[in-house]
Length: 281
Image 1 (cartoon, helix red, strand yellow):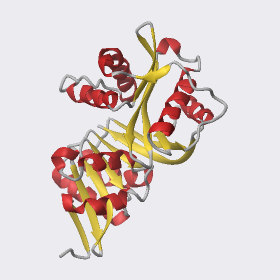
Image 2 (tube, one colour):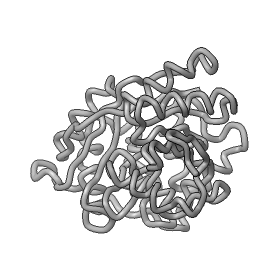
Image 3 (tube, one colour):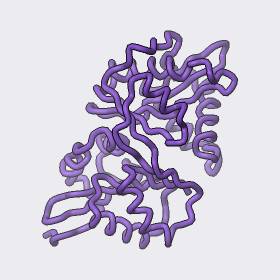
């Protein structure tokens, strides 16, 4: 019997209730929803625990606690509960990420115990589109990366990650987890690139996908080819694939200081509809 408010680790039998919460905002919750739809709520398969906040016997809020700590549809009361559990458990994640307001509130409660962070990105515009712009023609040379092309795409992926996050994904375990994730996206047909003479000039992935929404990530252009419009035409191509083959709504989030990228994404057809926040350790 659940009390008026209860915080617990969700069990597989609570999957439908968790999916109902995730479905309240299919765009913002795409990353976690995609994992849950594939893995369910078993922590081993999910790669972390799913914390649930019950109020009046109804599941109101979630928090994914894995490599990332992600508040989902989190009420102020739930955020306090999630913060208390996270403090007791100790930091196991490499980042906090999620809708800006909830993530900021969670970090304010965790910072005295977990801080300082390596970097805080307090406002990362969330951009969405359901139709490509007619202004930018898709790059006809952007294509899916094949399973036998891992050695081709990995250097570009590592360069993107290092540039974006500030540390190499090859540190720690030698990059085994990162290579597995890249291989997963390649195998699913969600890794795209423009390749010339054995060199990746542009690349991006559809990192999370549900029947209702998907999220583009890892956008990167070879430094020697920047300023030539490859990001716009390349993104237009990836967007065309995403809308045709994956989901009716496509999203991404971008650092607010990256004004060039924000302008580029707007020209491709994306509009800013909200904001994420990331706290990196």
